[in-house]
Length: 496
Image (cartoon, rainbow, N blue to C red; front, side, top):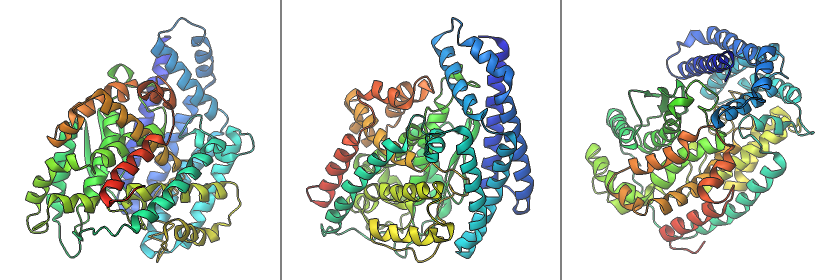
């Protein structure tokens, strides 16, 4: 490959790393008064990245490379970077900078609105982001569905025409499933009412989980944030965050496992792909499959807790006094409609995603007045989950994604659930003693299998093509629904 082209690829990755670092810092250690300065810094960095990506010389170099005799990996690099460039070359640099600045300002407004529990304080910032995202979608180009252009940035190849039936089918399967489980009369222990779980002990337990999962803490770190996320600069500098609540250890435990799933993916890219377009996941749905696989299929399984519950009880001897494994396992798998997406159970979780997807689609189409968004949110919460948020912070303001302007991102969570179930089923076939490994706290065999078949592949192949090669089939809800029916039917003693 031409040395100039490789150098430009590396420079682009370096700029993306700095943007990731600045964004991570914005969520963790940025001083309260530094928001406006960071908005300008991010705008400048994203503007520089955009200018280098749309540089005509890069287009010429990519076109030339596409006609040369390249290795398989080099062809993939050219394909991925060409796709990214073809999208961004259509977007004016002024729009890129405006979006970066609007995102930082919206993040500040979102935080203030959450404190006051008033969506109205966030509404002007969200309106500006929506205007800019619609403008961006039109610049990218689409066949009449702006959301397709935004979705492409997170889940390449996915379209509303295909996505809506997938999510609608999930919704239609899950609503009656939730109803059956609610009527099962299974007593779920109230383990967290009035108990205190020391924050330092929680932190220590999460670090043990990270180590056991194989997350390299010399090539990454964990910090605290309002909304847990994974970011960073490079496969050797991966940043995780978690959330600690002294009234219950579950948010810290499962946020850590979830984000570690993302982090293992980031650390698992092949070294020869570092600083190239291949050191990335082919879709956010596939990235999310790793976090959901670890958090739910592994982290909420009984074999996992057969090993870790004694250690958890030792960490919180008073709070967990008299609690046995059966009771704890039932408690961490309770199916109950809840207000907060990141705290919801596996069965109701995708209903939260359907709600957000439907509202996003209306917003991007400009078919829902922004002032009506909280009411529309509450109406769908009541329809799908049977509950209504008492305030905006526990309703329409709960997620950070809209403050980031990340329209088109939420559906990838559901796609991740579907991919996760299929990948885990393939891992069970490949690792006959997988359950035994979990029971003994041996998490590295699964990590290593995922590293070989998913992580190290990077962006060599499109997401669904990669999954098909590993599992034998593409996107499907069959494995996911079978998993839910088997696990929760047994837990609640019902046929689903």
